[in-house]
Image (cartoon, rainbow, N blue to C red):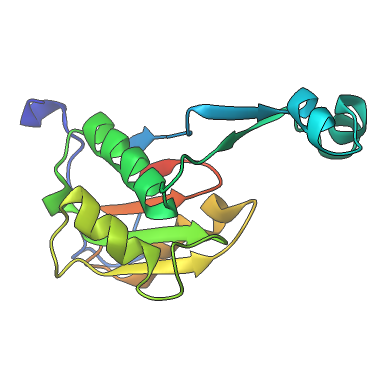
Length: 162
C-alpha cells in the first residue's frame, strides 16, 4: 500500500487527550458451524426455544487443536492487511476474552508471537465476554501516549487496529 494512502500517524506530543481511530478491521470464524437444528439432535431443545431466549441460530466451533490465540491471530492479520501496516509497527496488543488459551502466558503474548509483532510491544489480556470490544478498544488510548498503533482483539467479535 502506498504510504500516501495510509492515515497519518497520531501526534503523541501534542497536549490534551490522545485521539484514536479505527484504521483497519479483521475477523475470523471457524469453518465448522453448529446450528440449533444440530443441537436438537443432541439434547432436548428446539430451534424456537433457543432463538426466543438468545437470538442465536448457529455458532462456529473451533477445529480440533485450534486455540483462541490462533483465531485472534487470523483476525489480527486481516486487520493489519486492511490497515496496510506490518505487525512490527504495532505499539500495543490487547486481547479481550473470557476463553484464553491458558492462564499464562496471556493470549495477547501468544498472538504477538504468531503475527510477528516486536518482542518489546506490550501485550495483555482483558477478561471480558460478550461486549469485550467496548472494554478493550478504549484501553490503547488511555494506556500510554506512546501506543500509537494498537490491535484490540475480542474472541467474541473481531479485531480492530486503532
